[in-house]
Length: 314
Image 1 (cartoon, rainbow, N blue to C red):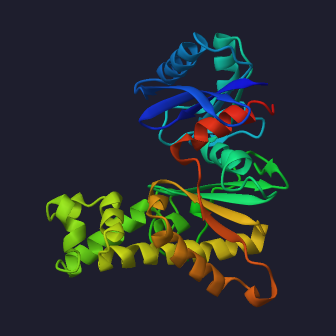
Image 2 (image 1 turned 180 degrees about the vertical axis):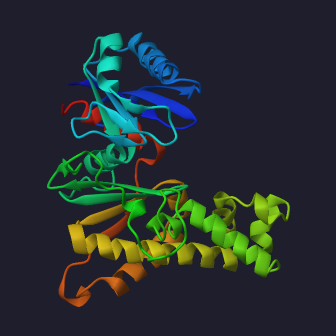
């Protein structure tokens, strides 16, 4: 297949693109994610894909969705920030578009894109960890996406890191994403601002001095400008990330862990502490090869590229 379409469905926008076999996006459109009903969400996807079909002939469509997708890549079981519940999306969209449609978890799609065309293109075993508002992931082992028996593998953000720890939106306590995510970074920054406002001055400046107005990008911007508090907050986040990656290595033994998501834009300010913590926590680390921890190469386009390429592999 020379051209396919990938659709990345998020909570606020739907991004769709025509992608060639080298992973290049040759045309892209974006529409707002509608509220209201599941039918309205389907309509918006059809509208975006139909717009692309006016200029390009494609052979299949891949849809990346943030949620639980069944092992057959046809049904969205549950999408917490969208309107789909047990939605047979591949059939519904395929009937309207008259094209084969596959559905994939969004982090799996991004992982596949990085494996095929990005930071993991030269290995057979790779894990993607997305550090955004929460913490997600995708796993490629022996050149195949690991989906699990029911399609819900790689929900790494909800691995319990601290028994009895911080409450998580999933209903459990101590999940990894409560300590290594954009949400965690903001929480730590607010705690610092409330305990030592002078130390947090550079972080607070774009929030007008209001700790409640802090956002993750403010911490990253301060750190990249050399602010010691910002640097230390990212280092703390990186330490939690690296400790969890050591656990991932013990279970999966990948060659590369790729770090994506918005927080990863901090680059080595996040990755170097993660690498150090990983090396310190890896069991038997002096007797085994160490995986590489690399930043993602494809950015926000990974979901589109991965979904489109996975449509070539029904």
